[in-house]
Each structure stands twice: as C-alpha cells, then as structure tokens.
Length: 522
Image 1: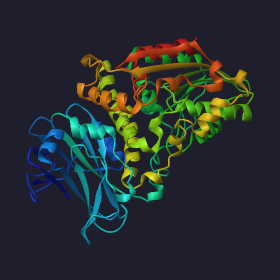
Image 2: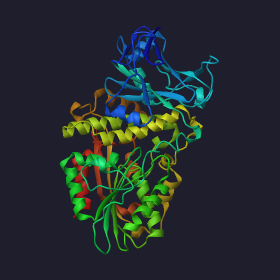
Image 3: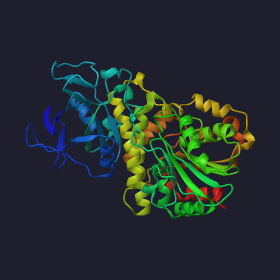
Image 4: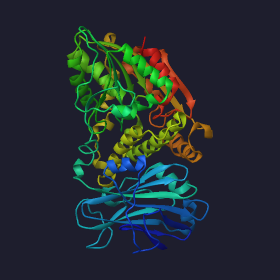
C-alpha cells in the first residue's frame, strides 16, 4: 500500500495498481509536503459550497488497467481515504468517473484520536477523529458505524467502484454537523425563502421568492392565473427555468403572460414539509389575490402534482369554493408515488438526482449553445447535497422527511387523493406528459456511453424493472384513481421510449413546451 497526502488532513492508502494524483493546487506527492487548500469554481463547486460543504481534497484515482474494480479485485486490498475532522465535523466523498457518472460515499468508521480503534461513536462530538472511507470491489459505500447497519450503499456507487473505466475523480467534502435530530427536517432547505414568485421575466434567476408581492394585472373583477408548482430538490427556477432555453419554451411563456393576469410559481420546501402543508401555504398566498369567480390553471411537475392536487382537490372546495379550476397539466408527476422515496432507496435517489441534474445541464447547454444553466443546476444540487449530509450522521431507522414520505407508493396522502369521491365535477380538466427512458447509446443524444450503461445496469434493470423516466414509474404519472375521469386519453402526450427525455429535461424539449401552449393558452 502506498500512502499519499491528498489534501489538508486527508491521506489516501492505495494498493499497487491504483495511483493517487492530487489535482493541481490540492496536494503534494507525499505526507507533509506543502499541501494547499483546493478550490472548485465550477457550477457544481459553487453549489456544494452553498450547501455548506468545504472541499478538503480533490484527487484522481488512476487504475493501471483496465478499471478501478478490476484493479482492486486483483490487489485484494481497498483504497482507504482517511479524513481528519474536528469533534463537530463530518465528511463525504463525491466521486466522478471520466464518463460523467457521479456517486456519493459516506464514512464507514470514525476513529477517535484520543482512543484509537473502530467504534460506533456518534458522528457529532467526541473530540477530533479520523473518518475512514473504503473503496473495494463489490463493497458497499458505508459500513456498520453510526447505526448504519442496514445501509448497503447505492447501486450507482457499486457500479462506479466495480465497472468504471479510467480515472475516478474524488472530492473530499467536510461539513459542520448540527444536531442529529435536526439534520434532515430543519436545515436541508433552511435557506429557501418560501412564497409566491412571478415568471414575468425571461431570466429564470429572477424567479425567486423575495417577500415582494407578485405583480398581477390590474383590473376589477375575477382574475385568471397560471400556477406553476415545482418538484423535489428544486424551486420554481430549478424546475421550470429550462423553458427559457428554447424558442418553443419562450413562446409558451410569452403566450401565457398575455393570456393570464399572472404567471406565478410558489417556492416551497419539498423535503421538510409534507405536500398538504405546501398546499396550505399556497392557498394562504394566492387567496388574497383572487376575487370570487377567479380561475386557476396549473402546470405541476414531479412531486408538485401531489401538492397541486392537495390544494385543488381538498383545500379549495373547503375554503374557496368560489374559485374556478380550469386546466391542470401534470408533467412526470408522482400521482401513484415512486419507490425511490422510500428510506431504503434514498442513497439511490440522491445519486440518480445528482447524475441527471448534471447530465441535463450538459444536454441543455448543447441544445442552446450556452454553458451550464447556473440557476437551474446549482439550486437543485445545493438541495441534494444538503440532504446527503444527513446520511453521514443519521441512521436509517431515524430518517424522516415528510416531503418524501408523501411520494411513497400507498402513502396516506396519495391514497386519500386517489380514493376521494366528492366534488369531482368541480375539478380542473387534467392533462399529462410522460416518458420512458430507454438507452440507445446514441452519442448525439447528449448522454455519455458510461452514464447510459450505468443507468441501464443499475436503474432500468435493477431499481425499477418497469417503464420509468429514471425517477418516476411511467404508469404513476397518470394514476389518478377515483379522479381518472378528469384525464382523457387524448390529453396525454407520451414521449414513449426515448433516451433524451428523462426526469429533469422535460421543459427543455420543444414538444413539452408546445403541448403546454396548445393546452393552456388561447
């Protein structure tokens, strides 16, 4: 085993056949040799920093041949990353393959410097310590420490370690640990300002709630608004910002601004709060803007479908029966839930989201000729990274996230919405957009061969085993139960089997924008 100092307080033990190459300015060739603090000015780096993750080391693992998994198996020894932390710190690894596959890893053990030896001490407190991360062929991304006895790691991580060809970039990310019981619920989306925001501008960076009341077209009498309800790990900007990148998307927004008295989003917490709580906040925000007789149309994306339905199917009939519901377009919505929302699949969920957010930024950039869409990418990555931090300090059985629980198949909220029978005639006419990811390994579609192979091996064939868009089962998108009559088959646009329309890119496609304009504007 050779030892390399890859960053300040970061040592890497690697077997023969795997070389450690610190990136420029991030470390020296051996222990004690002028290590400097690394930096990452990319969109991804800024997003990780905004999530409270400090880059402690940045290095490449370079297997001699042919891949990391083969090299580890041949040497029968793992790569060990040792990270020194203070008593109130923890750390994560974010690895990235040459082919653009990302995966997160969590500490397997915490060795306290005062009393060496592996143990199950809590992540927070206890004085300075060294966190141990291991990469070994066929091994999970986390071990028995910290109560993670049932954590087996993400299938994406398994694939990276076992199948990746070429160098594997490894970012070591430190962060300050808060109270364990608050790690998920109270702090993940703590920087998000909840509230209404206007989509009156073509710059999606401005679609952020700031406490200022949105502009609604002046005039007496009933109003007509278009409500945009965003998805998980996201905001109005993160979910719908891609509409501004195509002529068709901009045409839809222009038409909507003409036809409606206001086009409004509502930024809300998708992890810490349940969909019913989100719906109550939307009602409180929009109700003062809408006189009796006003009409609400909507575009709901992903988890936003549940939020809109809780708002329109449950709250409005009880509190504002004087308002009218016109049309509602559901884009890749979790109407029937998604198994990725179950706690046992959270590792897979965050790895998948990280990959498809980064992949969609590359695709959108290629389509528009522009660089990465910073507001779209960074907001979503920041939320994902904040969520991942909790995995290093919270055991599987302690996990709680009301916003994800609502998306589990058979959730209380989902059952309630899909079995309700009252007030069906007063609901909006429903429309839906769906797709099924099916890789064809066409380089012109924007995904790397390595990323597609991982998705085929570990997602399509292992996690879902049914049609899906990499996050939501395709059948779930049009599951309305007792409300099924609101959705006519002619009002469903199906992309079918495609590799370039998956969960995070719908609004970057001309087809989706065109359908929204056809359905919602005059």
